[in-house]
Image (tube, rainbow, N blue to C red):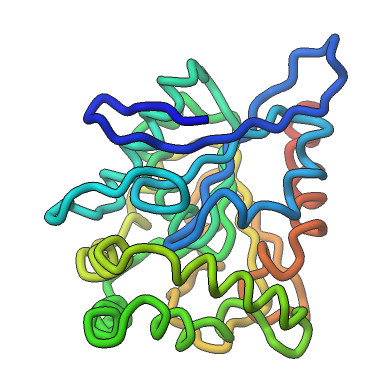
Length: 266
């Protein structure tokens, strides 16, 4: 299915709901990261959709969503505005929002702008600051050699080849490499700023999920994001290197269910 934002952009989305049909479940929105699509949540959906209505969408320029013309400004704020448009078009007053990598950063930025729309916030391996040189270096690599080269250079940071099925790694890399260079390079070139100081005003119950380590610690102190929220909680998966939300999707989803269940009883 597709929805159309006010500026004409068309975003693909899908709904999964396997809750008891006589109930009125809360809604979870899953926000993928840069150069990915709704498909990256495949391991989470079967766990969540038995208890919640789950909505996944493809970010502007990615997956099955439309790609804007050259010159579009790829910023966190614009992506956050797209997210607001998705909620408005689907008439979702309040949701549980789960984002991964840059999708988590966008979700955190959204929370600073529209926390009244959130029942909870979760970010997985998501930076709060973009004031480092690796974004510019990534943009340079994409301009020289293309998105596939950038994916190849970063894939072992994302998925640990010692524990992840090689077929999964190949599929994951192919999904990312299909994203237009103008989109990925445009965001990497524009990435800047620090949303960390804004998070102290977000009272939404917040969960931060992270692996114990990354092969390259290029995301700053993303694990420390939990301390920036008044109601933040950090869960670190010991012995895991990489993007835990993709390496251990089922355990991550179950941790989230425990987190969300606690909100209902508190």
